[in-house]
Length: 128
Image (tube, rainbow, N blue to C red; front, side, top):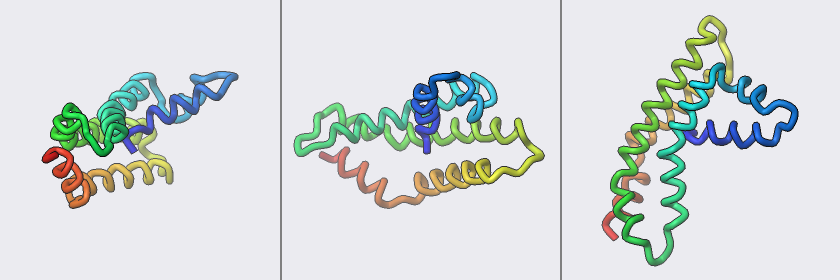
């Protein structure tokens, strides 16, 4: 969910005719695209941490997992600002894509707030 900007950027790299035209389909301004990349930074950091999990977890990974919930909450809040700006640009029209993005944002917030699995996973990594 939070790596949406990076996915759009990677897809645009494969579109040889005009890379910016494909990004304009997803984001109406370059500020929104930059904000999407900013939203993805904490999620990208969490992805890097997850790739470092193995039988012998490095100490920096275990310490970094202590701030993962804070990073994900910050990313969720910034993503909400991005979604509000995207929705407000085309306000009177209904779009299934906008509704799905908003539903995904709310579902991610619900997961961050109530997921016992996520809380237990981060607690087990930090305790190691």
